Image (cartoon, rainbow, N blue to C red):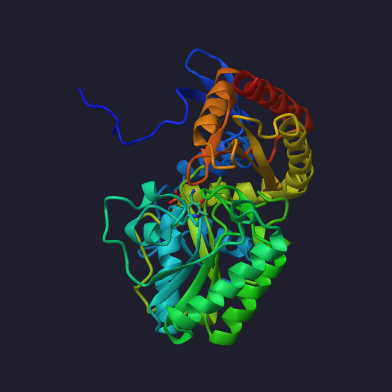
Length: 422
Ligand code: PMP
């Protein structure tokens, strides 16, 4: 009998039969409040009627157009519609299927456009699992270990991870930028550096928001040295953080944006966007793929954009996100680390919120985080962890979550933390 790979690590024991809005229903009909959104994907809620309708209509019309053979209307319409939300000047799009593939495309473009080999990433980064994207990933060794050699030409600079360093944000930012300058002076000369790639909020690395001084610092250095600034909005894009793009909070105008996840409500679709003059430096034929810009995925993405706009989901993410964060802080205040363990930090941006568990001496406590995540699961709240040691429990509900559902989630969370920490 065949089985799924034992290397797939299952975060919950749930077998989903169906899902609707912010709920996943298992095969016994039990409802689970889904604060994972399929790792930040189903932003419009599971099976939003408008997304379902658009996809069903498209399935019956044209499933696979294959954009290097024939073009199709959903792809052309989506390209046009994205122009309304993309950062100014990023008017050229290339579609693929996953975040990792889009990161690969951004990296290829940056190298082609600059004729420089090296990429700078920031400690704690997650950019994907293909060998190229894994080479840019520094959030945990499990994403790198045992399948090297990884791609050469990657230099790692610090991210302003204030809690990790035990500093305030200004000190952490000053340190990160100073070390970046040092890296450019000692390891990868600007003339060899094609791009910086950065997440506006470290995702898999532990839900750590960047800040304005840091992104401005990157933008300024990128401009000064002819280095491209790639912003990986795979997890933070499409309203997740309470602004349309995560970098909208921080003023870090990108040269290339990478997007996936929230783009198509669960259909496999991702894209990079760049100014046409930049994109044109990729020679014809160097971009492509069999499935990129699938017609059904594009139709779902158009409906997704409409729902985000019509239902004011970006605004909802900001408002519900603030409620979620303050509720998580209230719970955390009851569990300051004692003789054994506790909650060291709560942080986030919009509907991307994380609670970091620590041992008595302040070290990352992945064991406790896993126990709380499992306890929440037993109470009917689906959650994921992140961070190098899995020490952060994160909440990424669909952007359609209501104030009542946030309260309900916080109630389940409070119970789960009490189950473990007393
Ligand atoms: N970049 C970021 C910031 C991500 O969070 C992820 C996925 N968690 C990826 C890239 C990779 O996306 P995918 O899993 O679709 O390849």
